[in-house]
Image 1 (tube, rainbow, N blue to C red):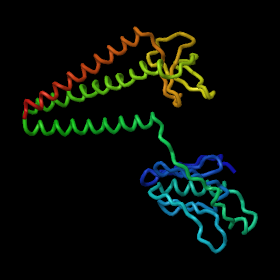
Image 2: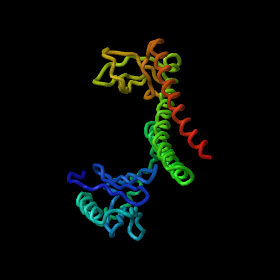
Image 3: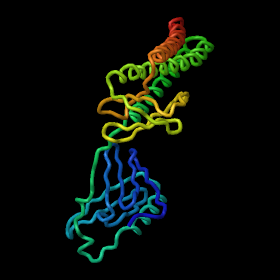
Image 4: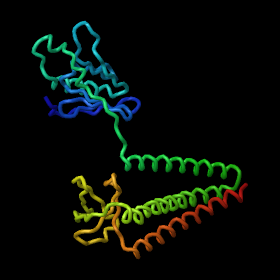
Length: 268
């Protein structure tokens, strides 16, 4: 039966996650997800900081066991007690020893474009930050400390503006391309977002980031085969203005970054 009482989510070593959802256990390892129905579970054991999920198996055979290590010992005990109390009762020994491993499903998790973009942005932000910090330390060792402080103040600002301008320029591709080569539909206003329906009948929403449009309906263009990737349809004049604005932002960022590069060149 489904769990109704609170049950902790176990987070183990290597980013492994074990949690209960309705009447099954969900084990996530990297991009692999294993779903184990309660019917296929004989028992859950808390072994210190390790949780073992033992599956039902025929008599005389070794049962399959899924282990998650590096979890909180207190959470492991609570998790095991709660799940065991929710497992279906076996009427007899033969039912308990039935092989229900076929009920376990393993699937590969696909990463959305938004998650992939955010992960990539986070990686490059940390990389740029560490490189800037390391360069500032080198400048402080080889040159005046004031120059190192100036470099540390100017460079992140310039790199950030440059990155923002590059993101804006990347979005301009969809603004110019999709209205001509994509599929254009009408979207209805819903708060700060607009909701539209693709050719398969699925609904999607796009947030009005600028929050300037008050029209009850607008036109949205999306990519063929990827209706979740869309853009608002703008007038030619507005597209020119957005392009000019994005280009200015990018050039300002590059100019500030050039000042940082000049500091390094002056030192060496």
